[in-house]
Length: 271
Image 1: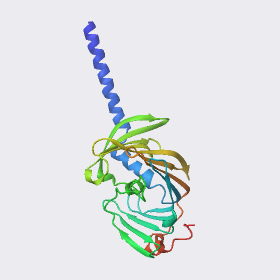
Image 2: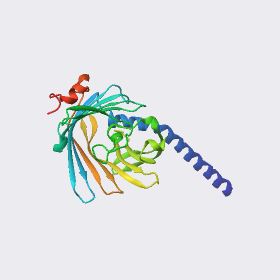
Image 3: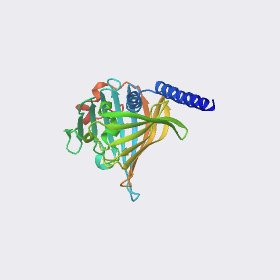
Image 4: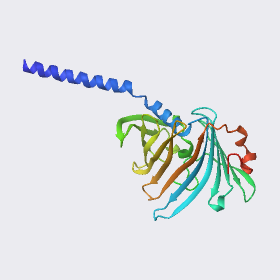
């Protein structure tokens, strides 16, 4: 009789665990949906955006270099095509330089650079999205996002990161040649869907880059990462980025994102 009771308790416990797993699966979004919502929260908030950006590049020896710029962004469709316009104030040797990107899903971006010393607008190659953005530890993809379709996603677990309840998502490039990492883990806030932390692993499987969201505020009811850091754990260098004077839904005109305004920045938005 005792043996039967133990068997009954074991079966009941097994069924309970199975039911909990089933409920967990039903209550959690699918991995691809988490990734898509996270990308929209990070790269597509508002219809458009303006921000003053201060970038501090820190060497292993503690030396620092400063980049200061204004970024204008306009979405043509959520999760799809975008326009970026970036104007540089410092360092002095790049002042008045302007950079423009037409971002497309599922194909290479179009990029243009205005070089004031030559009064020249130059179209630049966009095939390498993994190259450094203005010498920082952020890549071009880190700035404007990577196509969701380029990765496979897996929901590893759900856990508290500090006081933030997060999804822990694993992303693996479908084509390893398309990324500088073999896989990465992202801790994504369940409420805002912003990434709180990301770990990048190199082709040997060693952790080499660490992204953190150091400060998040609501701007016009939109959760926004005000300060973020990317550290290269293998070289000892890092980059801190601070966003100020952030504005959303300001009505950026399409004509801003043209060659004309690369040569002559729009005074209404660039001061």
